[in-house]
Length: 124
Image 1 (spheres, rainbow, N blue to C red):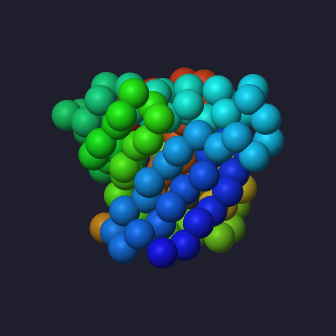
Image 2: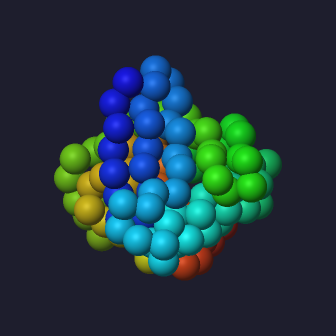
Image 3: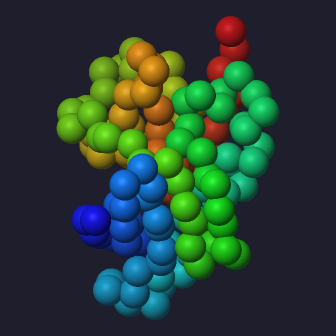
């Protein structure tokens, strides 16, 4: 098990699971942001789950009112995406720091999409 901390959430990495919870280590306002990010990731997953965009998102398996979400654990790319890589992903305004996107089954997959403002459907 390992623990990762972002600005507003803490992620427990246990085997194949990523468990995200709001984190209060930066104050109440950022805890609320973490809670909202969990709610947004859950909502976005539900909206793309049965679409052509689904393979590009790490699935949300469990959500407890945004207080805790369980997702599939992905391995970060550890590098920034090229402009082409960003265009392929179905998430607009992605924080392109190499820590929010990984590779699965030969394609890019976003696993931190709670902060992106919009998403768009991929047109194939």
